[in-house]
Amino acid sequence: MFLQQLINGIALGSTYALIALGYTMVYGIIALINFAHGEIFMAGAFVGLLMVGYFKMNLFLAMLCSMLFCMVMGVVIEFLAYRPLRKSSRLSALISAIGVSIFLSSLAMMIFGANAKGFPDTAFQSRQIHIGSGDISTLQILIIGVSALLMLALEFIVQKTKIGKAMRATSEDYSTASLMGINVNFVISFTFALGSALAAAGGVLVGVLFNSVSFNMGLMAGLKAFAAAVLGGIGSIPGAMLGGLFLGVAEVTGVAVGYSSYRDAIAFAILVLVLLVRPTGLLGSKIQKKV
Amino acid sequence: MQTDILSFIDPYTLQILVNIGIGIVLALGLNIITGVTGQLSLGHAAFMSIGAFTGAILTMKTGVPFYLTIILSGLFTAFVAALIGWPILRLTGDYLAICTLGFAEIVKVVFLNLEITNRALGLTVPAPDTSMSMPVIVFIVAVLAIIASALLYNSRFGRALKAIRDDEIAAESMGINIARYKVQSFAVSAFLAGIGGCLYAHFLGYINPSDFGFLKSIDMLSMVVLGGLGSIPGTVFGASILSAAPEFLRFMSQYRMLVYGALLVFLMVFRPNGLLGGVNFTDLVLRKLGVKPHGASHKREER
Image (cartoon, rainbow over all chains, first blue to last red; front, side, top):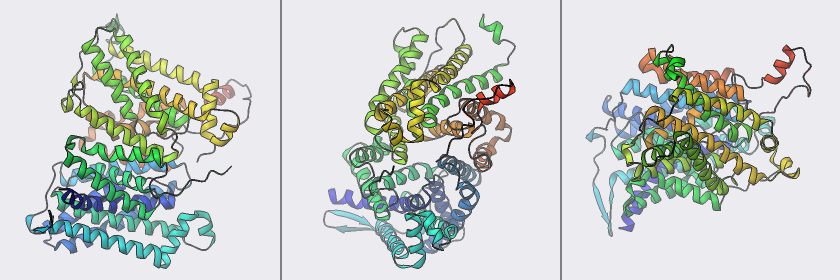
């Protein structure tokens, strides 16, 4: 029973973690809560659905296409809606992000209609595998595997490559990084591309998992992923992974214990409680007050 | 009596005007905590919701006069805000923002599960039994809210809040009790949100916990930021535009929200400080009258 919930929770949580990574990376670099991120996740799910349903693509190929599409989308959004506001108040950028989010979700509603759509059954044939007292479906294995792979790739990019080094430097100190010859604009675009690609993958996985893709799926998923990012300590990449898994497991356990009607509140209740004890999240660094 | 005053306004325009009035009360409330004190709240719809349900339940279950109902729902909301604010206002910046967002989601889900709020079915609120009609009451409350905000803005309390917004450490070293002022400002802000919610419930006649979700909070925040953060004329202006915008954009039917979202982005890109942000109205009026404004220009550094 417990093992079963743990497996379900990790599968759900790893999709939260994928979305949360985009929030946390963008926040780490330009201190913006990118509210349009949930909509990128939604767009990723739709592109994946289109590729599988209309172009009869393989699920993995569809996921790749959707990641590429959302990368471009993320970069374009940053260029049009956030870059002009980089020097103005953070709240203006936040409202701009909210505008983008409203725009994208209503655009999706116009294109795809207001009803939820499902992936065709042929997209992925799921089987159950018994381990000990629990069942794991091949779909869950796929979700956990793809998420883990993507997170490892991200960790590699951030820690081992030159652009990753530039990202870390920019998030440490924006202006010093640009003085050291780092093309900050490119780094920011790259960060948006990376985060959007992860969200798109998350979108396709969630679409297959719940077999439902709708224009408003980005809102709650985005909010929960954001909660996960803050829970782990916003700006921290391992924190986002930890926060996502933690919220996923907590939510699934809460539902299993019998609080299913409180499902959406569980994540936030945990968030509020954790922040009261650790005001900068689980893995967040202490904020130094400078006078 | 009231029919005489309002009979020459057609019901549709009147409805838009009432929406504007309620929007002004809500936006001025949010402006106190976010604009004046500088603490970002992403969950103000929760306070609106608490005010709306308190008001509705008072009207349905008790015989409290409507004017008292308005005040009681405001006071109860302020009480809840103080209770919540005490622990969470220790958080700073975006951590506070996400906490208020979380609180709003929790309130929504709890109301969706409570017996007294009629779960997901929502409440049908009977029309209040008053001598004045709803629109007149809304206008009066909106005007009172503007006056109260202006008085607060220039009071000792308001100056303390602005000091906290501009620099917490400097404010603290000048002897301002930051924690206490933040909670008080949160409570005052929630008081207005509660009143706005109560008016909303009685004007609309039907409320549902799902109406007060994240998007409602965002609506309120957009009003404040669009008009000009911290500026009372700006907030009133922003609330008027955004409350009326959905109606004026109605001719575009399905493109409405699309245009609304794009409009928010455009306005922010071209007027990042809000439509009336950075405009000092007192100085403007004084200059018009030929008086040299004292204290030179009050340019506030945006963070």
